[in-house]
Length: 345
Ligand code: PMP
Image 1 (cartoon, rainbow, N blue to C red):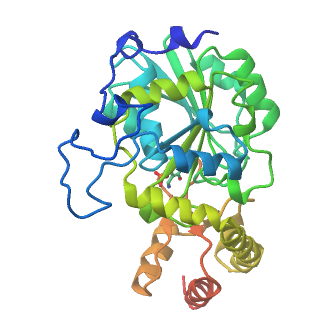
Image 2: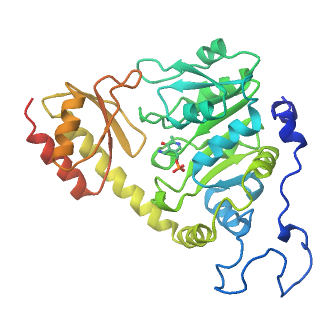
Image 3: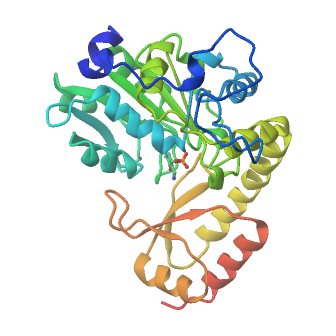
């Protein structure tokens, strides 16, 4: 499989925007009158590093992936959109995704006028590579997998993903937004084995920094090159880059937060399962769990009246009468459980 054959021809041929600061590379300079910035209000008067080199170095050390295999974006949502813009010809190509899964894959497909084909998960929320191959055709450029999957919470089977990487001649995205909560080995360590593999991760979940909007894609350096061609020149702002550098120095905080969340998870699951109107709590590898109840809408509305917001996933395929519940602080979790214990059907 040749990546060159997968990328849209106009993107392959694209001359990307060249910023003022790209051109003086290799020289020392103290006076910058090249980018029409203001000389005042240092240091925020200057454009940030378009390739976020320092942040990538640090992420590389923490995540164990070489910097040239890392793309950083305004949330991992930016990487999802770039995948469409780099690989999918509007009106002609299609993508295949597991169903149910994260809603932005379908929205980005619609925005980019790319057909979105859904492959329903099995009843235990597992997927099969063969089901995907049956619905894929010559114009299928990308397959989206999410592991652990949102909203079902489960990891996708490693052997099945390997099978897909073997059978499918296009881009395979493994969205690991919730990967830091799971025990399985991350797919990011395999991007130099499989040039077609794109692994997503984010600062929004385990890294507890959804507000700063920083997402990561790990991939073959040729894929990263195409993403960099198409992205906005300064897609990650200076404040976010500085914040990330600081947080990356304190990655033990992140480990502590993940431990706290994982400590609460089994308690929440067993307490929820004891509720008289709870029919099933699904196993989870993420910082949330999916629970089937007798009447999801009624419980959702009741909880809102109590000032507690959960996610009603009832309208989603395979999730009839399901609520998706994020693990919060012990206090927040207690607030949810005590409200639920007072609920009368
Ligand atoms: N992937 C998955 C599976 C998600 O659930 C989310 C956010 N809910 C994202 C990606 C996007 O994350 P962000 O843009 O905050 O990095």
